[in-house]
Image (cartoon, rainbow, N blue to C red):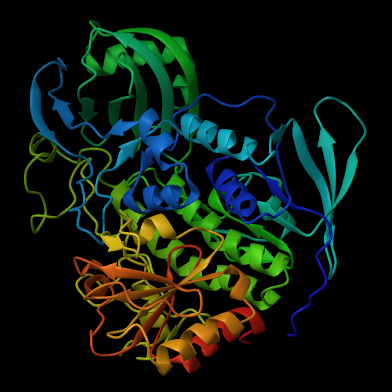
Length: 569
């Protein structure tokens, strides 16, 4: 398919202002793309909902400039304490529902942060306001037609004003499983629904219980009640998870309170305020496709699953970050529209594997027998890392090993290894721990980079969602091969959105052709990228912080940028 240089008509419309829609909006805004973001709700919700931010999501937040604000409004996950029933006051075990990830120079994020979803969304909205972008509440699509150059959408406003017809270049649907977008592209949800189960989420203010721990009561084979402390003392997210027990009738504050006292026996805990209360029927489903023409879906519009493992918001943000940088390049006329098809190619295997993992963990949300419940904080199953009751142990959960090694737009001069495409997709979620990085993997961090002025920085301070970053490792910063690589980057169709950096092990390399030069003072960059100091190596990092190419010369650079810019089909 030939690349069009004609500017696409209209803005990109984002339907739905949850975490995935807001993350897509901010990524596009930082790329200078005109956008509108709408939501049918008439006011912003105040529910905690998806509250766990995993390490990879915090890295993405850092690239988007929102990480510090999110941290300020949240707190690390507290330990979980199980109480004996009946009675509900005697602690029988204490443990962490999710373990921290060991931090290292290449993986600086280790702790899972709990930030109520409505606060995360507020952070994103505040940053979008700096770009003049505001969520249009009370606005929803009622019809959509697309053609080869754009999408016509009719919007209905809650204010009662006339239906508005808008022309958009592309549409991102992040309006949830029941929203307009998934149905509009004809995507089907495939999977299962737990008809006999249910979950109730409530945001409450209470007295009479410590805010230092996550309080848990569980009746084996029936329900689990969990009180997760929020940042402010006395505020909790209170959850009832039923298995072979549906608490649908408790989605009323008075009935919920009555059931809480009956099931836990803890009448000393005074529930004073219900901020929000919602009911959810457990579903483990994903779509058969995530786009049709110029319309793309992400987040809950593309996958719904158990909250076990805390993957919902995190996977949704990963979806958005993947499609938004690609849309930005295509919108600007710098890349072939073929690039957009790789959103589905890359994300569907990740979603499928995530869904399988969280579905497996769902069976651990309610204790199976008194012994398991009493021993939740100790070894269960086989191996020290085995999951147990309310104990999620899976290497994929931090999302640091998600990868796209099979993608047609990543290029590794060393090849793809021994696995075929299906074998690579099977490891899309858990990756290849302990192995050297390859094209398609998350790009590691590397601190301790010193420029010619003596200023210190790191790769994560340099990476951003609007730029490809070419990392050139060379023993000698000068030389014809280095100049050829720099020239190839400058001659590529993506030159205006590519930053080239040259690294030296023994000092700041000679500057070549306007490229930045850094001394890898502590060797973190060379080590993280598995670079042989004697061999010129080029690593190209995509705007989403994944390695697009691992090559050794100017021809390799040309091959990668040609795949992005010129089409690969």
